[in-house]
Structure formats: structure tokens, C-alpha cells
Image (cartoon, rainbow, N blue to C red):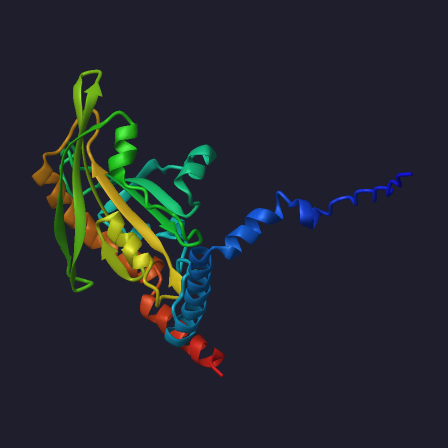
Length: 279
């Protein structure tokens, strides 16, 4: 008589035994020596960076520093013989301001009353913008803006313009543009520079280098741009540069002394704050 052993019912497999589509890749990664080495290295680098940043006062995120006085309050009397033409202070449309990335600006057209009324440099177009609260801001440059307006660049160069009141030469980039107009070709001469953390720079890549200085606690940059020319009258490059020198010797000291931050004071306040926070 044969006996049959009853079969033991199969036990259900647990998630651990059967494997988990979520946990298995993680377990596999931690069994990989290369992965573990990279993970340890990343943790060590992060810890070293924190120690280094604390020891050397490195600052990755910059605090904003605002103008001493809003640009719209620029003292027109200090610009004489240049006067703001009627309706010459332009308010930029909100949708364009969103692309510009700032509400701190002036866009003025001024008249040089010291030159002949028929002079092609009688009218100066001044555009100043200021940025401080966006660490990833990419400085706008006229090369892109004018090309977007249908102009074609026909030349560029770097020059320096002496500003005796400041006792220094300021670098400027000079651009020439042309585009088709109803009565022929319209030309425009544009000059621009940036003032960034107390320094002038005529190249936006240099501006970003200055902004990324790891020892600075604050950051700002301001673009100063001026142009000459109308659809009816355009100066030569030499005429525009000569006229720009006269105007810049008026406006740059006003911006430096009345509006842009005193960077030495910013640094002194930052150093005092750092000493106060030190144990």
C-alpha cells in the first residue's frame, strides 16, 4: 500500500525575494565600486567646499546693492549744455521691460545746444540700465538689440575716452550699423560700456567674470549706452566719437558720484559685517 506524502503548499514570495523594480537598481549601484568611489568623492568635495568657503569668505550667491539714487532722478542741470528734448524721456512698454529684465533705467534724447542746429551730433540718445537682483542675468548688448531691429553691423572697435573728473580713461565699444530706409540707408553710431562692482568694462564676458568674483558679497552692473544719428542725418564715426567724448565727460561723473554705488563703501560695510559675524 503506497503512501503519498501531502505536498507542502508553496509559500508566497516576498518582495525582497522576488526583487523590486525600485530597489534593485539602487542595490546594484551600491555594489558598484566605481559608483561608491564617485559618491564618496562628491561628498568629500562638498564638505571641502564648505570648509574652504567659510575659511576664505567665498560668496557664491551675491546680495543686491541698489543705486544711491534712482536713475530717473539724474540731475539734468549737471548735463548742460545738453537739455532733455520735449517728450525725450521714453517710458518702455511693460512687455519690453520684461525682456529687458529691469525697471531701473532711463532712455532719454538730449539736444546739444552748443553745436549748430544742422549738426548730425546735435541729438544724443542716452540709454542707461541697472541690474542687481538676478545672479544669472546675461548683460544685454547693442549688437543683439540693433540686429533685432533690422540693422546690420558694419564695424566695431574698442576705444578709451578720458574722463578728467574721475582721473581715468573709460573703455567703450564703438559699433556702426546700417539699415534700409525710405530715403536710402540709415546709419547709427553706438557706444557702450558697463559699470560693474566699481569697475568699467566694455565687454559683457568681462562683466560676468567680475560678477563671479568669489570674494565679493554683493553684485551689480549698469550699462551706459549712447548713440547718434537720425533717419535724416548721420554723423561719421570720427564725429560721433568726438561728440561722445564731450557728452560722456558730463554724464559719467554724474552717474558715478550720484547714482552708481560707492563700491569702496560696499566693501567696507561687507568687511565690517563679516567681522561682526565671526565668532
